[in-house]
Length: 95
Figure 1 (cartoon, rainbow, N blue to C red):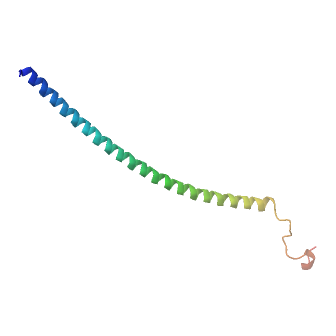
Figure 2: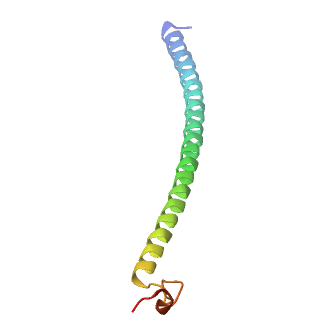
Figure 3: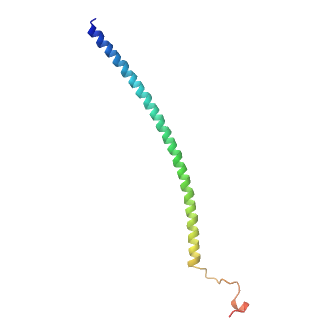
């Protein structure tokens, strides 16, 4: 064998080992990134559930406040048509 052929074969074998190593490293890195992405998605899902609970509480508080305001203005603007006194004015000496 000539020294050139031995050099070509050794360089080819070295490149083959390098490529196999790089592909193995890339595959492992992609697995880790996929795992990290799944963890991020899980954390964001938990955060979204927390925000949904907060929104539910805010909706209840807003509904309560709205009912209070509507009741206040309904009583103030449209008072009941019944008399505010329990007895007729003649019964307690009013003119």
